[in-house]
Image (cartoon, rainbow, N blue to C red):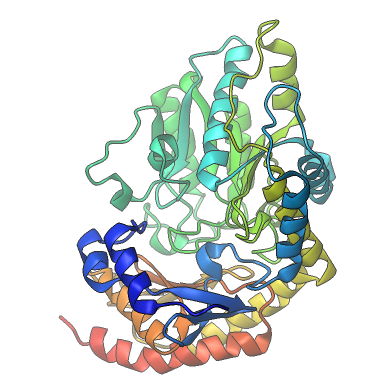
Length: 459
């Protein structure tokens, strides 16, 4: 690695680079942590420090850092054909091969066989919103255009996907698109209805039914859900949730869009989150783990039912009027193919199941009895500790800066975790070993007593 003038890069960054989800004045004053290299689960900073990546970047670096196999596949593709658009009847080999590989990995009986590659999860969700509306319009129901999603869900930050995101902080000074509505999430620890699962009667699913009746299901195109709510706090659903909502969607002619942006490609210990609950979506959004972040890549996967309706019922001579410049990008798809090779050849999906179980067991052993621990939850390589002021009442701490204090203290000791509102979350790369997880949790264990001291006695 060539020498980096740390002071120069810091100055340029402060002056010119906008950082997402950062306070602009603080970023200008303090500057950024500049990363310069990565191998496996470790990252090197420009100032010489090494930290453990306990969050896989943004849930996405599934195969770990420094995979030269992907770099070589990308370089080889760029030497041959770096890019050409796939509009009209133009195509390329990597996109065709990756689409075939993806369809083979998906459960065969779901009829998910048609793929449009993009560059981000937001873009994949936007595409699926448009396709869902086109599907209904082609069937003579253009009034079915509203999108439902859930409170505490994250689906992107564009105009439409930002409106689908059900986290209030994203809507300060930015009104929701009126074609989007939010319903109750299956957030059992903080049930909006004061119920306890199991045996609760699934009022969160009932809220979907009531919303469709109140708002007129004849105006609703689709319901968008994550298999496990990610940014909202790593919230897996109760076992019967998806069976209930799928029946409601079927009854009201509402398409089910599954946002597998985080959960796809092994993150939950299976190839796809849908496999845990026999989810049968009409459209699926993928991103993140499809390329492990080595190049921007996403996918909208469309069921036979939706695809054949668009193919057969759009007005004659009218093409599918949707597309982005970098759809089906050959170099990005080459990265995706190399990424899948690693996931398969190294058994990383199975490793995520085994090591993910170890991660949850260790978290429960170390933190379950803490006076500030409300709940420990997760699935595969997704885990979170929700902190509370009172374990009996589940009263949260009023200041979400508390979890950020924990994340910052961990970083100073060599570990990246993420503060998700009232939760501290981990999502290690799928290549992480039990020993890697133990190293990560040793840092969190070192930080926790001070966190208890700072928070537990505060009025």
